[in-house]
Each structure stands twice: as C-alpha cells, then as structure tokens.
Amino acid sequence: MVAKKRAAEEAADGEVGAKKVAAGAAIPTNKTMPTDYSFIKPAPKDCYKLVSYNVNSLPAACKKGFKEYVKAEDPDLICVQETKVNQPMAFLLSKAQYPYQYWHCSKTKKGYAGTAVFSKIKPLQVSYGLEPRDMDTEGRVISLEFDSFHFVGCYVPNAGEKLVRLDRRMKWDVCMGDHLTGLEKTKPVVYAGDLNVAHHEIDLARPDTNKRSAGFTIEERDGFTAILNGAEPPRVDVFRKLNPEARVEGYTYFGYRANSRERSVGWRLDYFVVSGSLMPRVSDMVVRNECYGASDHVPIVLYLTKASDGASAADEGREEPSAESASGHASD
Image: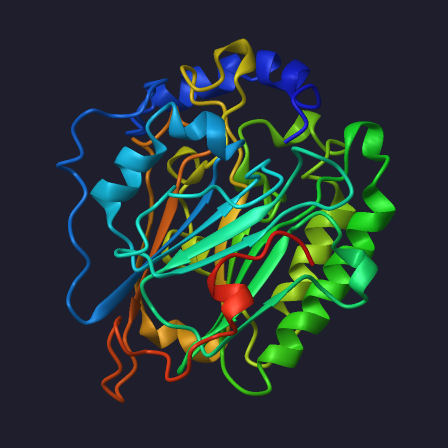
C-alpha cells in the first residue's frame, strides 16, 4: 500500500467508523497480534484451508507474530503478498510442514512487492508472472495447478498517488482476466490476494470522499467487474456472495495513520474469487478480524471442500514440480 494516499480520508473517516461501531458491529480494534488463538478452529476433514495475507514486509511481520499466527491457523496453503524481500527467506516455515515453497521477488526494485506460497499440497506445476512477460517484473503473481483446481496468488499493483499508475493498472486487469480464462480451459480457479480494489461502496468506510482515490476509482472497480464477468458462469467474489450486507466486518486493510484501526475505518482490499463452477465447493470464508498487528492487513481464510475423487491434502498433486521451483524461485 502507498502509505500517504489514504491518510487524509482516514483522518476524516473517524466519524463514520465510530458510528458503525456504535451501531453494534462486532469488529476488534486491537493493534497487536493476539496471544491466544483459541478462536481458530481446525478445518473440517473434508475441506482444504487456504489463506491469503498481505504481510506488508515479511521480515517485519515475523517480528510481530506472523509465524505464531501461521502455526495457530495451520492452513493447507498460505499465499503472502508484499513480502518486500529480494530472495527467499531460508527457514521461514519448516519444510517438514510446508514442503512446497515458492517465491516470486521483484527484479526491478529492491525490497518491493513480491509474493510467496507455502503449501502442504503438492502442485502439478507452478508458473510465475503474467503475459506479456513485462507485465509482472515485481514478483506479483504465482500460479499453481492442483488436481482439481488452479490457485492464483496475486498482489495487484496499486494505481498510486494521484493515480499515476492507473493506466498500467487497467492493462493489468485485462491481462489477469486473460490469464484466468486461459487456466479455466482446463480447471476452475481460485484467485486470491490483495487485489487493491474496494469493489462497491459497502467495501470501504467513506466512499463519498474517495471517488478518485487509488483502489476506488470507477476504472478500477469496472476492471474488477470485468474480471468477475469474464467467464460463464461469472466468477464469484466469495466474501460478498456469502455476506451481501457485511460492511466493517469485511474490511481487511486498516492504515496505520489516524488511528484507523481503533476507529474501524478500513477498506476491503483482499479477496478470494472463484470460478462459478467451483462455488458449490466453497464451505465458508472468514476474515480474521482479530489478527491485526503483524501487518496493516488481516488474513482471510477460504474453506474449500475437497474433490469427490478422494484426493487428500497429502496427495492432491501427482508429480513433483521442477527442482528450481520446489527450492524457491526468486524472480521470473
């Protein structure tokens, strides 16, 4: 996230946030990670637990409770965005627990952007970036193919202060739509990450004053609509499908400035989007509102029912990916 771009509106949003909390919305306001994770329950045996988390610097997040959260959550797969590392972090998570670890780091700017995926499930293959190849030089996309679905972990580029990168963002959305369509020719897709858009007015605290703010321009919102509608049946924004009226409960980003977390002034920027044909396998999706402090985002969790062919978290994939991918991929 660009730290300055929302400071003014966050300061102005206090009244809205306060009113929402006063109205009875149950949203935590803690600023550090929990010490008690008893509220996290294991996934049902027939479900995969998939997590997406913008960590806003993985080295910094590790000092603030990231690894403790992962241990408590115990997902089958976790995709992290905005890692801000230049190479894979050795020994971050045990390979005994997560034997399949993939990194995509920026090769154009040090300590910037970046994604990583840690999985208990063996993928059939892994790819990095988008076409054309110069669309992603910042380590923003990792795609994994499993037996019954594709997983695309993504950190969508921000339109920037004064919308200086809005044109690039619009091209990105088109390329991502094409990427998802290509994957869907073989299997349905789970598309997850910090997608850097608040799709509807309900997805941020103060829509009226943010019409030309990065993440809420009509161009970005229409771009996301086009991605959802770019398949038949349309792709599904899982949280909004399951929670059509939720507002503050769905916020996933709270800026550090102006006490936005304390006042429940946030944006919903992090998503699980699934192919329409995969929606019947979605058991639930949870925004981990309690897990704030390691980052300015909170994690989101998708429970996906396992395929009826009996594949398990240990044997979903049938073939080892390349040795280069399995040991970590620093750039593409």
